[in-house]
Amino acid sequence: MADRNAPAGPSGVERPIAGEPTACGWGSDVAAEMLRRLGLRYLALNPGASFRGLHDSLVNHLGNRDPQMLLCLHEAHAVAIAHGWAKVAGTPMGVVLHSNVGLMQGSMGLFNAWCDRVPVFVLGATGPVDAARRRPWIDWIHTARDQGALVRDFVKWDDQPASVPAMIEAMLRAAQIAATPPCGPVYVNLDVSLQEGSLPKPPALPDPSRHRAPSAPLPATADVARAAALLRGARRPAIMMGRCGRSPEAWAQRVALAEGLQAMVLLDLKAGAAFPTDHPLVVAPPAQLLSSASAALLREADVILALDWIDLGGTLRSAWQGEEISARVIQLSPDQLSHRGWSMDHGALPPADAFLLCPPEAALPLLLDALGIRDVPSAPPALPPRVERRLPREAGAPIDMPILAEALQLALAQQPVCLVRQPISWGGSLWHFRHPLDQLGGDGGGGLGAGPGLVVGAALALLDAGSDRMAVGILGDGDTLMGATALWTAARYRIPALIVVANNRSNFNDELHQDRVARDRGRPTANRWIGQAITDPDVDIAALATAQGAVGIGPLDCPTQIDAGMTRAVAAVRAGACVVVDVRVKAGYDAGTAASMMTRSHQG
Image (cartoon, rainbow, N blue to C red; front, side, top):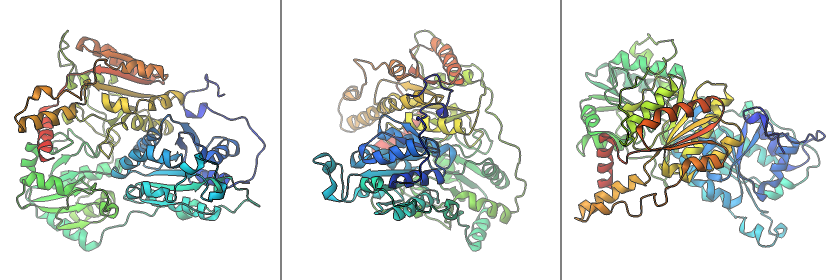
């Protein structure tokens, strides 16, 4: 049993009793060695008999180091933690999923990572493919003829190698493909017999640096020239900042390009921080969906530069309301390389008068040079602006999202944070972003339950990098309750993080849908809460966190409580704890989000 008084952080827990050093005597030893050579620091998993051989190799062959196992209480949380890690680190983290049943549990997480274009390295396992080696009953129900088919339509690549040399190659290829833009999850399934087979002698292991992911392709010179000519001739250019790189250098290049063109800038909360939100060129706060005001501004543009904007075609159609799109469109995105026939996550097909099939970061230096823009700032992005208390704290009044955001920022006192996730009720004007790690965007797939795991994974990546940023997630109550046991992993491995639950005691998004349907049909809207309200009994989310070893605060249900509650929470995270604050908020959306949701609801 690990020492519970071990130092803070994952490195201080779960060290096995040292045995005699051994060579790679088993198939799973080779798999473990390859994980180490691939540079995977952690493996999130929920144990399963199908990878008992690999589990032994990780503990007794590698000593539970590089990679270290992170025990999770649900496979979906394991994938979400790896997803959150990759959103910060930009590199894959490992996951192991037990057999077909674990893969099915983790499949929503894989879909999220797929839609978010995030690299995740997943090892699977299956019962013996050789039927003669299967135990009665259990090995039969945990063995699939083509297990990868369960997720093949939303992973970049999968394989089920039949020998140790094939396993080595599959792991190298998977790591390479996962990290090649557009990134995504990969899945390698290991037959239990392959793991548990003894080896006559250890195989020679390759150098993974000779199989690293390639650099992003550069666009053709003619395409760059075409895009530059369109921008040079624009009278009212617009830049739509979508999925962009998180390096400060790429951030500075985007600022230089916008300033050089004096282009209006639109931002997307789903894609994460890509540009300073308080810059004078930003024409509207970042949002989940295009507001009517932003759509009107976009229609004024004569040239639009889209930097890997999520569903560019759908956004342009929404802005032009079915009319012909009058602006010239320049698209910088590699996303077409991930488009498949099963999922519609590619969005509507946009027009493109210049199409540069590469990540924005690959083309921006070429565009800047072609446009003669050479004044790229070298100073690091500034801290968030200081927030002053402006909103009243009235006893008996409801807590709304602006009060929650203000109280949290006052408690943080300008400490750099990484906002991992916000609920759909979040207004883009509530928080300014001045660094690419200030905000990470959405979960990709638009489901619920990933939020806690994403926060834990992002917090682990920040901890591992020695960053002083605090991982903060502002989650809905439904998202938190579906993913709550991810909190145990944070507590177990001493991962400091702050989760603030904007708890409206309802599946409120669906209340709005029911409201719209009832109004369309001339039926009572007062019934919209039925089958939606998470009340009677209310769930004690703070107690749920405390029961798992985290610090639970709340419920806070009055504005006069919130400043002290947030101050206590921030202090506890700074001391190394995972903290959950249950804030009972007023049910509702800001006006822009509500209007967008109603439009979307009406359109189906």
